[in-house]
Image (cartoon, rainbow, N blue to C red):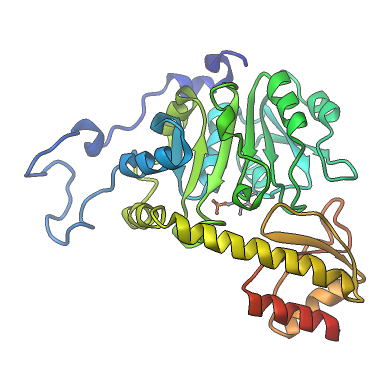
Length: 343
Ligand SMILES: *Cc1c(COP(=O)(O)O)cnc(C)c1O
């Protein structure tokens, strides 16, 4: 990897971060008159911990990483935006990513006026490593990858991800939003081996907590320090920190839900191919299925009429004729199967 100093935008490297009251005094005291808070209505009268240390301790223990290697944000979307703002000079630098993939990488690049280069996946929805690396140049600061990928559902092959991590001199983000549903292990275990690796995870999928907005980025402490420098001081609110702490104690419950979802996914993989309007279902390591149907637009509309909403991906690269179907509860999946059979 290049020196971090040469990768980070110069203004970001040189700036002094905002220092909050909570930053300036850390420790125990009984009278807090430093932050212009209302003294009543505890505990919500107080600003939350800007660095979310208690929550990070919990996540560090759960994931086997150092707490200094964790950034927490208002969803993964915040981490995606901050990585771009930290490393990519608007109008000059660029980002390389894959197509199709999660739409937020491109939106965040556009918002920041950073060129976004998309490299098509191959016919197995896998990474074309050579073309990906050819698309990168000296101004490419970040490569965004997603595995298991959305909307295709498959893992990118591990050896190809290693090739990118080895060859690329900038930051490689691997978005693992769906890793808990996958047979492949996380890349978290590789953080120590690749200083340019950033792994994204989230509480929005397997943990069943999309509503609280908690995204996690894991990287070297040096990279995490840069993100912390430019984040909003209190980017993760107290209600979210509290709920996340309690939810992360429920690992058994989460694992049971994941097992049920995977079991239901397998059932859908058996049932869907028997239905007339289903042409093909793609392999998946996530909690959704990419399904090619006879007429995606018509079938999407007919499902809507029956109160069943799936994601129409027919206009997405390589996904012509496809619907993306999230695995639901058993009775929800039954309703979907019944409705598709009756179309
Ligand atoms: C759902 C999803 C996320 C989650 O984003 P949050 O902002 O954490 O809810 C991240 N990446 C991908 C690829 C996703 O599909």
